[in-house]
Length: 172
Image (cartoon, rainbow, N blue to C red):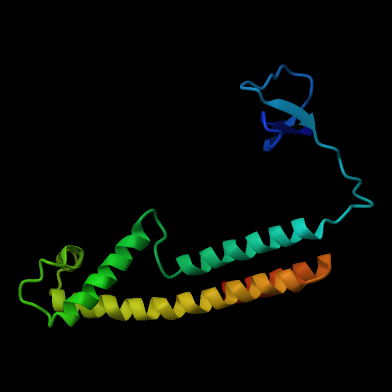
């Protein structure tokens, strides 16, 4: 099996596949196949820009994993957390009104958790404050790691920087 690039009509690589080169395969839609040259494992040519990109992506992935230890990361859930925290702040600033239905997400969440809206607002604000501290630390580590990878001048330095900052993110 050899690697082949699937090239679109603009000359851009859209995918890389493994293909035996013998079985019938004809890409459709103006795509063409181009064999990928095998690199001699004894004398690999190191493209530091590509190594930096890979290291940066690994740091970004570790950052996401560190954050999801403390918050659910599903489509639109972060927006709901933001709205709930905004409504909790607005509810408290409004003097904790007896008729809280101007804060529908807060009310729905309080009802689902069998709590008063006032108590639930306090709990949401406290959780948000903890999350902000975690978010600040993960962002500090993420940016510091990316800066260390950018500053590294050799393959070994890039990998050492990546490993160091991923270890710190995993320790959160």
